[in-house]
Each structure stands twice: as structure tokens, then as C-alpha cells.
Length: 252
Ligand SMILES: C[S@@+](CC[C@H](N)C(=O)[O-])C[C@H]1O[C@@H](n2cnc3c(N)ncnc32)[C@H](O)[C@@H]1O
Image (cartoon, rainbow, N blue to C red; front, side):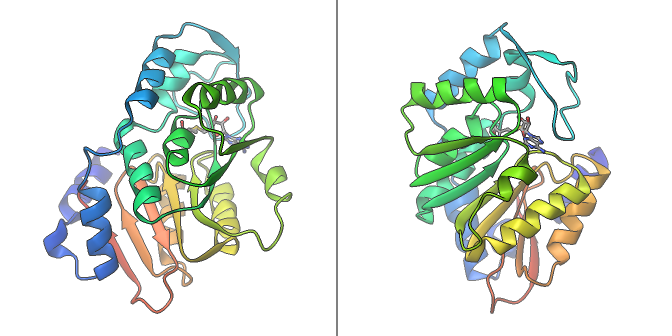
């Protein structure tokens, strides 16, 4: 991971190194404005969760966290290790705001921190989670924060994906669960089949493991994708037909 980060640091560029108008705008409006959209209510909720000693039974469906794989987990440990960090939560909210995102699909609700950032500006968000006890807490959190635009679905991702109509299309798809190679490529395939030309497909933890690194390499290389943005923690791809195929490593 350290080596990957050093490589990323060497390759990353700021606005001066970007010649694509779309990516230049994305850099200036989304990446650079890192102080905006970090939400005090969501962060206060996160603080409460990080302090919580409550234990819940956790059925691990995905590749799992490297911290705490036992069946009983404290809310504190989940909030600390699984939730989208404030910096990237803010980034998700800025994308939804600036690009007027209406429909979102999220893989992996957990306690609902990432969902809440997405729900701030998106019209509707569908979020998928396999662990019942964690989803119950997330649903309470959406109520506390007053988000009524969240539709949470309980189940294994692959089962839930079969329930979507073939012609359902999302403006943004956030893949943040089950960080294994084959499932990630399956979710990416689903995302491609349920996206339009400007849909943002966002993958978390692209350098988390060898499998995720390989998944990211394959996704970037996919002929149906023309733009990839590497923010080290997150990878973002868009079809953007007609644009020259290019990979960008952006300084965040
Ligand atoms: C990293 S956490 C999601 C964090 C969340 N997006 C946030 O920002 O707070 C991943 C979640 O995905 C769920 N998950 C992993 N693999 C799954 C699968 N195959 N089916 C359903 N849920 C799964 C886990 O239970 C876990 O809660």
C-alpha cells in the first residue's frame, strides 16, 4: 500500500496538468473545494457512533474489514473502520450538488454515513446492505438526519441486483462493499448496464488489496470507459463516449 501511495504521489497532477475540459472542471469544482460540504450534522452523528460501545451481531458478507472480523462488533469499530471518511463524504456531496445528480445506487450502506452524504443533494438514493443489524442502525440514522429520500434494501448484493428493472438507470453508482476481484467486476458490469453516458461509477478502496488493484486496472482498461480518475482512496470512471480514452491521477 505504501509503495502504491508513493507511485500515486509521483503520478498525480493538479489543474495545470489537465487538458480535458471535463476533468479540469471536475478538479476545480469537486476535488479542490475540499472544505465545502463536510456536514456538521453527519459528522456529529459519526462522533456519536465512534463513541458508542453498543455491540451488534455482524454477518460478514463481503471481503470484510481487516479490523474486527468477529461476529459481534461494536458500533464504534464499524464507524471507525468502514464509514466513508469526511473528506470523501464531502466529495460525494459536491459531485451530487454540482452535477445535479438525481438517482444514486450505493453498494454497502453500513451505518449510512456515505449514504447520508449522497442523500444531501441527490433526489433519491437506493442503498444495499446484507447485514440486518447494521442496516437497522443506518435506517435510524437517516431518520435522525431527516433524510426521506433513502430507500434501503436488505440482502446479498447479487440477489438484490436481480430485482432491478433492466431499464433502470442511475446518475451515480457508488460501489463500497465486498472488495474482491470477481464480485467487483460483476458490480461494475451491472453499473455499466444501468448507467448513461455521464453516470459517475465510483469505487472505494481501489488500492486496498491485490484483488482491488487488479479490479481497478481492468475497469480503467475497459473499452466502454473513456475517463478514469484516480484519487487513491477512490476511483471514478465515466463512459463519456466521444471523449479520448484517458486515465487521470488527481491530487486531492
Ligand atoms: C465499507 S462498508 C460500507 C460503508 C458505507 N458506504 C459508508 O460510507 O459508511 C461495506 C458494507 O457492505 C456490506 N456488504 C459487503 N458485501 C456484501 C454483499 N455481498 N452483499 C450485501 N452487503 C454486503 C457489508 O455488510 C458492509 O456493511
